[in-house]
Amino acid sequence: MLGRGFDVNPVVWSVLAKRGIAIRGAAPANLGLDPERSILRDWNLQNLNTYWRSWGRSTASLGSAGHVAMTVRRTRMRMVTWGALGAPRLHCTIATGEIVGKAAAGEYALTTFGPRWQPLIATAMAYWRGENCANRLGRAVQRTGEFVLEVVNSANKLPKA
Image 1: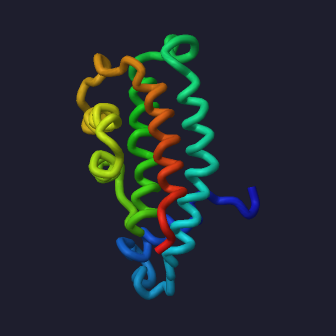
Image 2: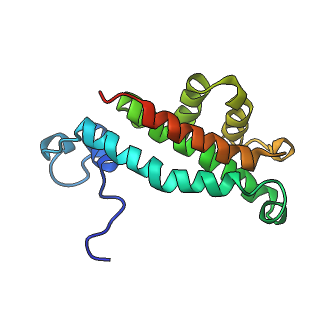
Image 3: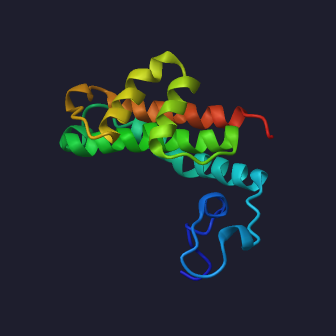
């Protein structure tokens, strides 16, 4: 669609400016990119308040019956990993200005959010590393939705830099 492109956003520009590698043409440092921290922060906060808040609400309401009971364990683990590592990536960027991958987001989440979330985050990190975690599922999908909502609420309380 004309005028839309998710990859044209402050996160991509920031990564390109800081870590881009020229394959052809000018080096990223010479492109005049200015990944303004306030714009990066606002973009991530908007993403948390729209996509992630909605995702958290719908996931938290799934419970352990119904739709979740019909999904295969692997899909459930992907949901846990997507939420438990995805939303903290944005929180980390809002708090620090740094853009991190999912593994670093997991480490950040372990130290930033309370101990009640550590088993969930550890499970998501283990699955991300390729470990078999199906026996840890329990209410993990629903709890992931609850955790994502806490991440969103916490991000909205962070002071502007």
